[in-house]
Image (cartoon, rainbow, N blue to C red; front, top):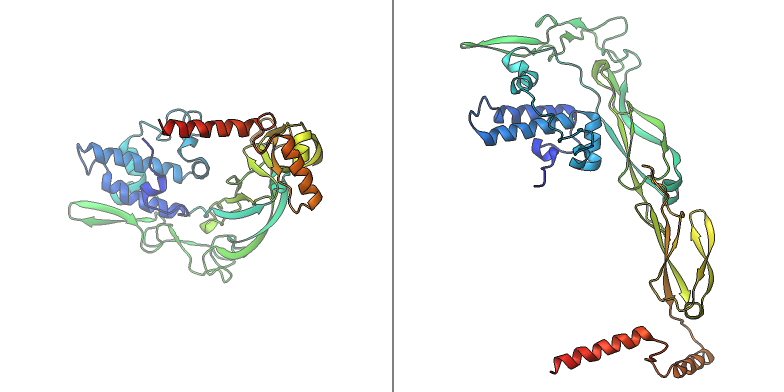
Length: 377
């Protein structure tokens, strides 16, 4: 049975950041948690599914693999390492305590959020994709403030311990028989407050900038491949680690060649005389022109393989081949002499369906005759 899309399981978009994913997970995990649904196997299965989606999508490396290869990235031998990506055997109480500590106690100070991952779409020519290239790109992003170095506090000052929660990031509220622990409303779970915000970033610790990066594209990439630049995404909040930048590759359509895996294909037109008598022509490759010997009596559609003239994949392996498909071109703009010569040639064949010189034509018309004979029986 096909597995559900991880983003659909959590009800978030593919561009969702870690905060959105965690928020969606909390909502769904509370809904399907076994403690709230005793003896409900369907809810328990749903809870496990939600947990698995959360664990993948909050891990940058696993999320990148899933975005590129889907569930196949975590099959046997994939990143998940034998037996899917669930991690199997995790105790519900461990999960519950980790995600809902701020509700049911045992809460911890909220950590500053890691910076968001960014995506840049890069279009390459076939030649650039096959040979590799280094390109400069300019991207808008949030970077750590140079003045306060990400703290958000004015130069010469620093964030102060929150007087409401005394640096814990959590406060306790009594509701009937229960004591509920939640994020501090003053510092929003950080444990500290900024009395004098930095003038450059206004207390955010990050500023909007554009930066130029030099990206090395390895030889052999193809449409759909992604290149990860670690730490080149948005800066994290208040000194937290930066996200990653993913360069998404797209290869433009080539006027001559078409790529399929490591092989290249192209069509080579030849005239009627060469198809019948044979000869030698020049065909293009990505490394220059090469000679191709065309044997006599060559038919349209015949493939000629030129070994080692294809592509070497970025994932390794042997170099592919170039496959040239011959197309016999019907002559046009004939003068009277040429028409007369062709009629004379046709007569020498014994008419339009000469058996000896046109075996495929004879076979076709024999088949047509048999077809109609069968219909009249």
